[in-house]
Image (cartoon, rainbow, N blue to C red; front, side, top):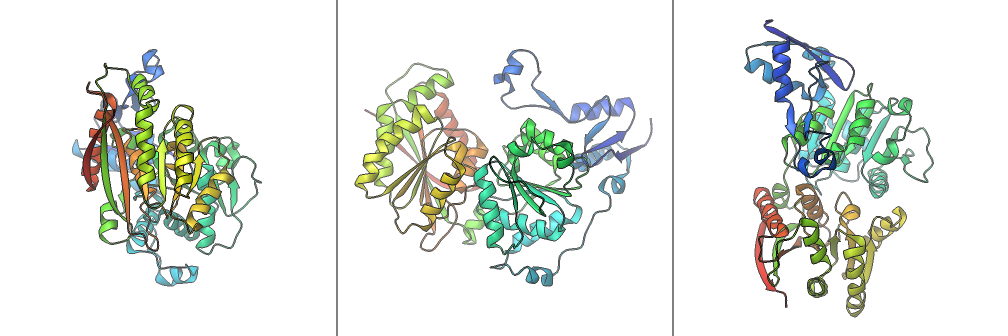
Length: 475
């Protein structure tokens, strides 16, 4: 058995671990993970997949370059020496940027200390996963990175709305060059900076994917999707890889997949710190438990169908929204089953408030979504109601003038919940706080969605958020 383990670069995605078969089997087991909720997936149910993700290939000894620190630690703990780090990383370490460089950018405001620290950490080796909550200014960090590298850069985002928003942010920061935006209906041209959705970028030819020097994945928690994984694996010559995200789902396999594709996690700052510093709005949470008459135990989907079609529940949500002051974002899960009934109930209620109701879901055009955002941002009214599906407004959309967020549909997803909360945390003139109404249901039968509330409360405790629990009986 050799006392030295050597790693060598295959390309900008993978490296090879040169070791004996025994250590290879250990690495294979160490980097094998059971995917959360795999047992509910069709491929698992049909016995086509065992529910595990394996990040090390026992056949080829290949593993993501971003997992180099874990391989190093694994081997050293077992008494092996380790060689080849400089070859794999390519000695890309850079000096921190100077204040004069920042001054020359002529930004409209001074970056915060934690943004500069995150930026400097990312450029040290050019591989990093920056974990920073919503409203912490990730788009400015991305802009600084793109300007610093001054190379052909692609920024990948999850939605067309975020393509438009990111482009607008860059212009607001002082960028004068045209930005190429890639999604349906947009003209594609050669530009220093391209902003694209992953759906559109996945259709690009191999030579286009490999033409970029820098790839930045915004909202990188979504990069666990197979399509996004395939995109980054095809970008074999792209050395600079940086991901930014506000949330990880808490599972080890999720974190390691993202670190493998981008680089080690750097926690930039927490929401709690931002609140204490006065950077974002203070958050208060009302966990509202609606007590139903006793129901029999149901499957998860039957329970959801019962809840979203419950007239008393929908009327409670309508009356709650009608009682709130300020602009309110109401998030729902099912368009036909829940969004449409709420829309019909909200219309007369919002009219009585002399307010404006906006309805946004997957079929809403990107231009119309952007128009809703701009109307609410620029409106002098403070009684706009946005009824939106989680898929369109839970991630990334920047609306500062949101005073209230209502979870009309229950969810246990850590990412979805924290991202949704972030929609209302940005401060603006006259706004220093935001209220979240987290609606759940007690069917008096140990039901699924009540248990999901317990998981959300665990998240609130971990994040240091304050909350109250209130119960109401549905007649």
